[in-house]
Length: 506
Image: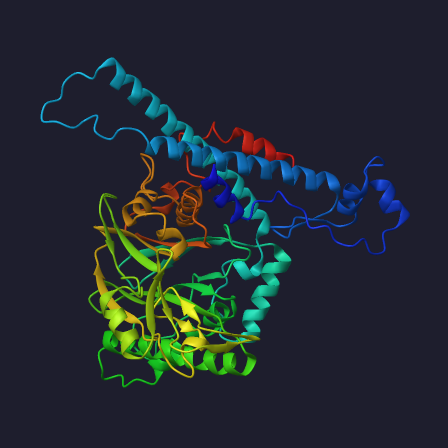
């Protein structure tokens, strides 16, 4: 139970209320509340605000229903933690030995109980994920949803306003044709606030990259995991695409396109970081962001190419067509990675493990706002993060850039995700979540992305959760064949009935 209490204490469960002063409450408003409510109920009726998630409700009835769902959240979480603890105490040597004798009655009983507990665990996880999925849908806002890269800040602001006015949200699928080979890419994404107070993750389904002259058209996507505020991630959404295009336009066209693109992306990361740091220095913004950019195109021989550039611990994984194999395309920039540790320490940075997490710290105290402290970060490369780059640079802003050759017949999907996803899921588990039920060939990419972030939440990730899925659709494959349901069919449909009933009451 101590573990449960610790987990609950750091999760934004909505079981506490913030009682705010009742300013300008009319008699009519007072009559509309329960006449029998006393001090606490009257305060809640004056302004119904959930203390932890900061949601405001129109009336007391909606607030109470919200609390009921919160109670279900907490009950599911307690079931998960208790069941996991019980499963951890089961003997693990039931199948040991060279021979395979018939299990004894005791062993059969233990196995049966273990299977029942595992089923109970999946039930609770499914209900937890279903409730949070509904909650995330209601939290949607332009700052936590897909925004196409705009050519200017004005256009970007217009897009945000349009999204806000129309209620459009989420990473709706995009189908993009690459070259004349008939190969297409199908894109979708999902982002959840999860167990954080705010969502600092961002994603872009179209970087609006422009290639000069006779260079092949390209399509770029990105995932940015902001920290210490979303300012840097928002800046990257607005600027990194256009900076890549500007750097590419300045290159000598006699140089092979692939080489020019690699150099341009590398330079754009540094340029964008320098520009943001200048603003951060003037405005006193300490935050930063990881950056993961993927660009795809077909070359003159109609071969499918993919550039992957990253700084930080957001990760890209390639999933093979048969679904049984995946390939990690990036290596996380963690301070305990030997080459990263050497780089940081050679510049005076301190690399140390604290509570199981390796971090980079400034060698001296720095001033951040009204505080004087040694600033730390759990990645060795990022964009932004002024306290770790001035007056002394102890983390790197240079991306690792690689180009891969893809085969549409063998390579099926690419998953980009923030560390909140991969901290609790292996590459193989993420890949398995993309597998469609027979006879389907693909599941919609936005539905796949939702599967990935929902499963990370069910596994108790404490971070923001973002996944972007790229399906490689070869010539002849019809996307009309795919599953259009946003929630994938599972053997847990009946389990979430209680959660669905709760949703219908809101």
